[in-house]
Length: 355
Ligand SMILES: [Zn+2]
Image (cartoon, rainbow, N blue to C red; front, top):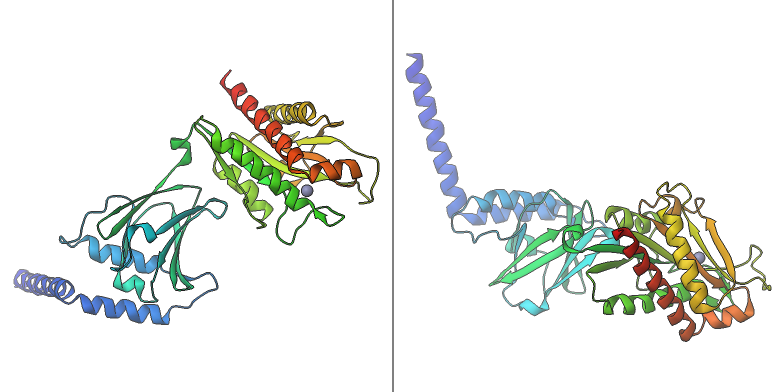
């Protein structure tokens, strides 16, 4: 008697499951309607709204369907019908550990009209926002990854690659200050701009370098990433070297005769590599610029020096509070020379590792 009852219950449950599958497969509108309701009730923050849960649910529903095209990489997005392949922009915002996808002519309903599916252990959140009629999808990751995109038909396939598996060497270069944090200011000249100009020149040299060295920059514009995210970039990448470019001023900030080049290192780096890197930077800068030596000095009281896991050097190229040096620092010729010197010091330090 009990057995028969159990069998009937099993039969009923089976019938219900089949019916549910039939409904889901044949009435996708029900699914879309449910998603739409959910989107309408979800709150929108300043940086877009999280669509990670939505993506996970869509993945669960769509991956089971046999008619779905294959998932070639970790994620798959369907592009709106009127959007061409070359209009899609994929950017690695490395300091923010984010990959950003910008698609033109999208609207608020994108995520239920064109589901994004897939999964990666490295995704911590997915946010969607509309900016000037463009859809911006921010994929937040738990580390620094290179986007690996491929567009096939109407689908964008996206994967995330570990930079350590692509590049032989990884260097992080930091231009000091930025934005409202101007650094030292003398005669209308702001340190942040000189630091950035030198780093821009340095970038030109690395861009031409034939070796498989990848350089990540904490900023290449007038932004001001937090100190945590600057050193965080180097640490997350397990960078071979971390170089920060600054310029000095006297403690009082008054113009004076004090001038010269100084490089900070991390004393607590027991390998001695930070000290060695700082020494290479100093030697190279003195040789190229002909500036006075202020030596290599302990920089452990500086947050980014103290917390860098990579061998770190913080170069103070010259004194903005010295008229002669200020004039030089403000010239492109001197900035180029400083960049050349730092470039040589980085290459020398990277070679050192091979021995
Ligand atoms: Zn500075």
